[in-house]
Length: 243
Image (cartoon, rainbow, N blue to C red):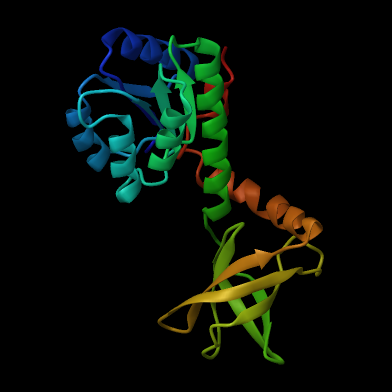
């Protein structure tokens, strides 16, 4: 579970204010810390959905922590908000170069804080859904180099699929025709690429280009299963609806 927020700010008053606002408005767990050195250990062991870092702290400061987060680990892709009382161009450039997504300026504006966190949560969920895989066995036709192969999917996401084929297929561009149970015999079609090969003639295919109507059909088919299969993975929608 990563439905939690981390705040690291050496100013106890700012730390407490942000925690109070976020706990009340989101209902998720908020971990607030004034010691950036202690935060390093938590970042190595825990996954967070959003991280707020004070720009200027005793070492490691906000940019240092952001660079550490971006190098590797559980939070490498976690959105970062840099909290700062420095609005200079150099500070902004330093923060973004370190890996921050947004800046929140002091004194803390509660409305802007909530707006940023909600926007980031929505973006994270959208990205998760793109890559979230649904176990699904259905027919898929693959065309490449003037050949056509009948295969079966193992799992499917909005971004690609894992398939099993009768024979080995080359790592190359491929035309995909996915036959889903509720599409009245009309496959969802688009271009992709074979990006990995596993044992037992299993191949990972990344979908590169789907026409808008085909993308819409795939979403219409997959999203209900994604949400049903992963309803416990994220905070409920109502969590972020409160004022």
